[in-house]
Image 1: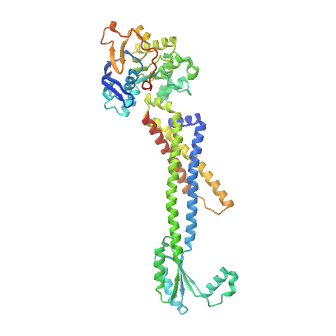
Image 2 (image 1 turned 90 degrees about the horizontal axis):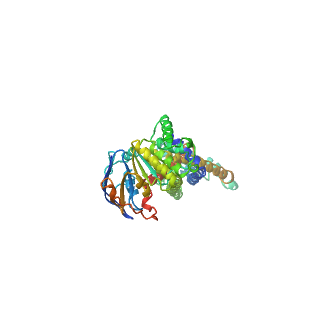
Image 3 (image 1 turned 90 degrees about the vertical axis):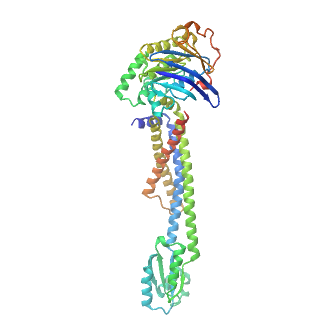
Length: 281
Length: 245
């Protein structure tokens, strides 16, 4: 209670310094937030693309319906497989005509073979899994050819991995910069109150007693900075949505984690700054 | 109550600050600590309130030894010691009353106790009418009285004063010194570091003199006539960095 009052009085005594602290925290978290937003949107885009990963097995004209149906049932029971669809010759023709409207009259009935389309589970789309499923499907005697765009699948996965690693590395770097900036901001407050801290020590205040108002100060600044950063990221996201491309925003858990992250950074920054000061005097 | 035994203090950069210093202070005693700037007065006071620890020897004060005092021991000890400085060290943004209250608040004292104690010490130092004044509205002598009131508010067994009259004119010096005498008469020991030889000569209190970090005179162990300070210290002495806290 006393610590809260002290923290509040200290902040109100130097409103400019406090505002500067909050804005600095907000900007560093804004950078983290923007990066996070880009990261989740890239991830979403990649997820959408990988949705399309499918294996297409073209059937020979001699394939008998019962055999194909039995095979589809078998394939459907592979643990990696989500769904298996049958595409008849007519459906293939119709789809081709629709997809390539201007060449619609080129296609004639019976030109395109019937096929089965195998959709994989989201966690089973790595190049090795795709290849192994394709190989098993190829083993059926009525399957003429199997296509799954090996190169494309591999590229997609490599991109995903690079995006993930870069995301984590840059995220950590941004967070570290944010912690340093928060520490420096709190340090200014600590220095502004250095005389008070010296007197507190001389009249017998415990270190915890001295620290607590600063920790609360850091906590509040972290939360306020986090909220301000959230607002900035939201505005930026709206602008991108309006003028460029459709993007998604953080979900509720991510927002909560972001603000909590700001609060923790604030507390951590204070802890380091005050600790260093207390050790020095 | 206070025992300093064979104490030495060396700083990595400025070298020897104290060497072979030993003396004791009894309960309720008034002791002057004199000597030129850089002689080690402030260092001794710092060792007494355990802001620093000796390189050799032992400082023993009210049951707490410099050899094994924990952070908690030091915190507790400081609540029973009053400390006063030449530059007052008041918080400029708080009233006289708030400055004094601050010393009690940090110890977690209950509100009612704080109110009555603050009123009592303000009366004791003669500033009851200036409770709501800010330091900038007070004279040097009055500011030092506020600082003394802050030092007294926890009922210390000893008041440690580092050049408390150093920034004051003669009249204010007399007033503050009289206040310290009254505090001592009421039973609190006072250890006062000072340059002011007139003050020392005029009173009959025990005097310990330091020079170059060594104890060169202790009136408790020598006859009064043997006092060495017939000549004043170098009048141009200014406090060195090791003398300020």
